[in-house]
Image (cartoon, rainbow, N blue to C red; front, side, top):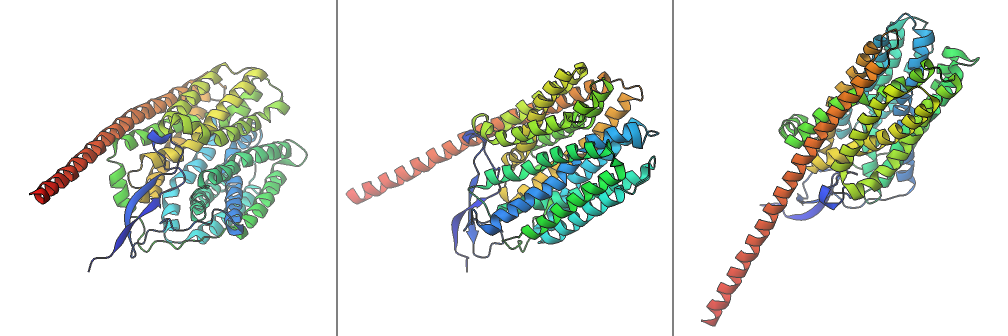
Length: 474
């Protein structure tokens, strides 16, 4: 006996937007859903608020504040490692600490996403929080010029923690919000930018003051531990996991045959090779060009504050430009501004580049999620497509800063890494342009096909009705 079905609307996520409707609205796709369906996000009732919903959103905000925000403050560590703590190491080796941390945060999204789909939300959040705190406390015990101690704690330990925390803290928002999801996600992702601002100010003042490195890291570890404890107490899941989780192997085969998505992941790989050059080197670049230490310590604060504004406004801009268009604009702007760092040499140039690049980088960071959602063919596979996208892009993050550090050399030849990072970022932007062109052409083809099918359906119904009328008249 066939199972009775009725069409319901399945909402894939907060950003599933289409180019033709401005790129900022949620994507509603009609699927026949049976009573035996195990899809977890079939739209029935979303609280759209309430104590549990907002406390979970606040917990997600704190998770990103303490994990991705801390990672984004690596420029402070890089400056201190280079000038004081790891003075015998090459710029390549120091850069690898931050880049490997960021790579693990992206690459482990595949694993944490799969575990999240299987209902291991609390296991991921608690384990990641404990590991983040433990890694920072162990980093405070690392001795000067002991590279392996710094790498194991700051790069490996904190990187794994970031990879475990990132996906669950974002995905759980979909349990409570549908209509307000985009705005809530904007609030949550602000945590990473605000965390970068707070930790940059805190660590700079502690490291370069009377407190010193060990106690400074320990103080940041206590703050992080307290905030993560609050986050774990606030966050709650609402929906049961699916009985049949998404098959990531099948999803990978499907998305890697999709031409626009292939151009998107190639673009992400090249773009992220150069994207993190300013955040890692701006403070050191400023100091080495003779700009005062006090102001240089706040160069990353300026960049991250501007990034916060970019993250907030990205959704409103995408409503007018569309998601693919805004991605291209942000990528070209970032690449051009990275090239502009060749001319950095004064306080004014640091402020201008920090503000402009921070804003464009914030827009890009907010729009990559909606971009993947736009390209995803089946909304129920959105998590798999995002995991693959971030995994491939993570390799660009892995190799980008070490290459820039090698080009910089101990003589601090600044134009070489800036030129390399700018060119490779613009190469990624070119891939995004090809992605947009093919995606728009496919959309137009699909629209013409739908119009033709609708026309044929109308003609068939009309012919059938006319035949019935003729038969009745006879």
